[in-house]
Length: 385
Image 1 (tube, rainbow, N blue to C red):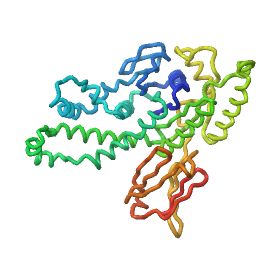
Image 2: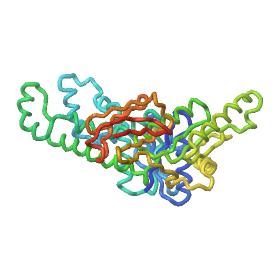
Image 3: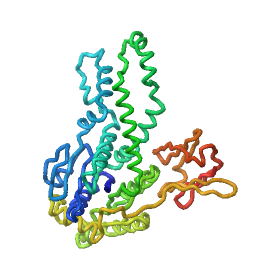
Image 4: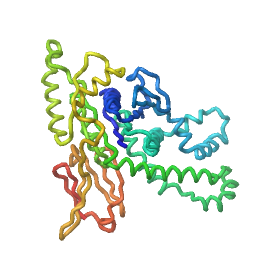
């Protein structure tokens, strides 16, 4: 099974391109599911149909759905949610909308990710296409499993045995209920599920991301930042798709000055993403919606290229050893030396690129060694141990 995630700045046409590629793949005979993780769903508008929270048939071999985070949360952490609901309402008058309050910031992204895992493990489809939320939310979606897993392992202090021993005393002293076994079952279930999810998302033979951009400078800059952050989290970007290219004949007269700006943007995309396959779509004369128009757009984007397989793959982390030291190389395209901050916390490496920070365990070869120095050259951060 293949999983393809489409991401990019808001308004660049992610939904249209994702839907067009889904139609093209389904037309080739593969069974495809496309789902939207954006809370402001517009996938149904592309197909001119009202979608549900479970897969709905759109055409032969193609199914679509829009994720309902409240519904998914009930399936993922029912007992834990009931316990926290009890905690929040025990001294209140019941006026608070607890169901909404308990969908904490970030958990929407996690539930979306769990749905990806569920679809993959059921194995009912050949290809899953994910129409992601705008860039910032997508990055939250992709890094949340690692962050929450780390939190649950290091911060949650209560263990099942400890709760049983101390529970009655705590309940009496603090006048709060202690969690039952089924709450711990939920925590363990979520942690085990997140572990499977992380393994899946980092499997570059199955999962790849495709960045949608337009030729405008601001959008290109965000695409570059997105590309860097995805590499920071070791995700594979296998294509860049440039949408809404204005035909030259449409830019005569009033829009004449845009010709040079667009050509400059297209040149920058070609130079910046030279190693990654690039696809282009001119601005169409009609809105990209309904099945037939989406099929046409898919053919215009990909031409003879089958969009289903992994189109590109590059090693992001590598370890090299010479007589003097180990060198850990991390690919961070478009990062600047001034953007980087590097620290070591025992057996963890803490790497920040602008406002994105990632902690990850050092490989076993480096677990007992300390950083001796680092340099940034050719898009690689090279750390000496």
